[in-house]
Amino acid sequence: MILATQAFFAPESGGSPNADNIDSLYKIVLVVALVIFVAVIGALAYALVKFRARKGAVAAQIHGNTRLEVGWTVAAAVILVGLAILTFARLDSIQNPPNSDAAAGNLVGESGELYASTNRPRPPNGKSLNITVIGRQYIWQFVYPGANEPDGLGAPYSYEEMVVPTHTTITLDIVSSDVVHSWWVPQLGGKFQAVPGYHNYTWLKIDKPGVYRGQCALLCGRGHARMIATVKAVPPAQFEAWLAYQKKLIAEANADAKAARAKLNSQTGAGQVESP
Ligand SMILES: [Cu+2]
Image (cartoon, rainbow, N blue to C red; front, side, top):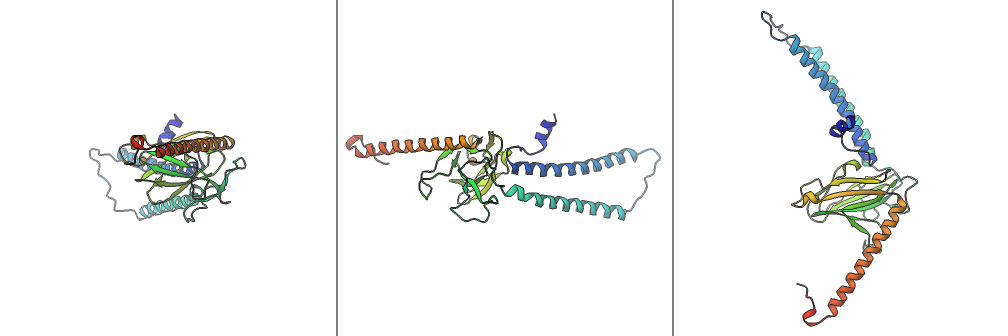
């Protein structure tokens, strides 16, 4: 019951520290707001009952109460400033990733060596596993480190399901190849838009192996509802094996396509397929 109520009133969390910090910040604001709500509604209900219209009773005529008015203005301002300070104090742990744990794998490298950027969050030691998240109508593509060429060619990729190693700081570079999409796996942190021609950055760090689900959070066309996102966290060794296998599959598929192309190009006459 408590869990169900909590899930209804508070953001999802439990996957990554940034999501946990958003969740706890939300709950602090919620508790403060609840206390004020109960006090105000309680006072209102008390006044309604106590001073309700009665036969023969004459209402007292009150013209303001300076002490009370100054009191609730100052109290509200103090609460507001308090919450603002708390929010800014917590913002750092939401925006900026921590270092990977000692249990992280070998694939952790310098994060974001390709482009210098001021708004890309980095762990204190600058090392993370950087994954490019590409939104396109209507599927998410994930490009992992491990390119054969410096220009990124030959990098392993996957669609729909992002596989990540546990205990590792993952930085995400979110882009779009067509229209604006929105990357959001609630248990793993905040929502980030994938905007064509623009890079958005966030991060995640998962300690528990498991599957975390999300969905494109911005109406991006008629296939939007199918644009689901899954993040699967596995132990680092398993991730490295998966990545190597994925790379092998892609290399094999490319070799097959190359052979098929060569065969088509060598054909003449009616059998040759011309490009339209
Ligand atoms: Cu979308």
